[in-house]
Image (cartoon, rainbow, N blue to C red; front, side, top):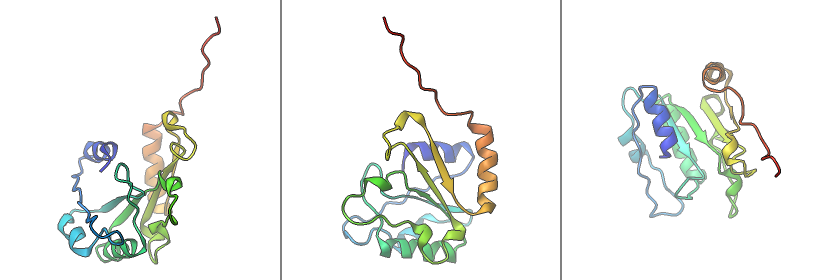
Length: 156
């Protein structure tokens, strides 16, 4: 799990339960058993980081279907970090939001960091259902005060 997410999750008082994926099979990384081992009674969401940083692996269609079915069965939100989606050069990137029934329970997180080489600017967005976006807007109003300014060093 990316440490930034872990810190944000813990700051809110939630508990992080990292999931070790099986990388033995190139086609399948997630399984119902792996997901079940990490989900408790108080679990509310699954955070996906695909394409993954730092591992570089990408969830395929079978993995996304497994995760989507599991999330729907357990009434879980999906937070899909898709910041590295523009770095998939071998094959197509698939978003879990396009799996059947997932649009209503998925929040996509994306940014200009990797796709436009704007790492320090911290410009990004979320896409999701209105029910989640209202809460994210409230959060953003408390956390974000504008993007960093661009400045030029004075010429000597």
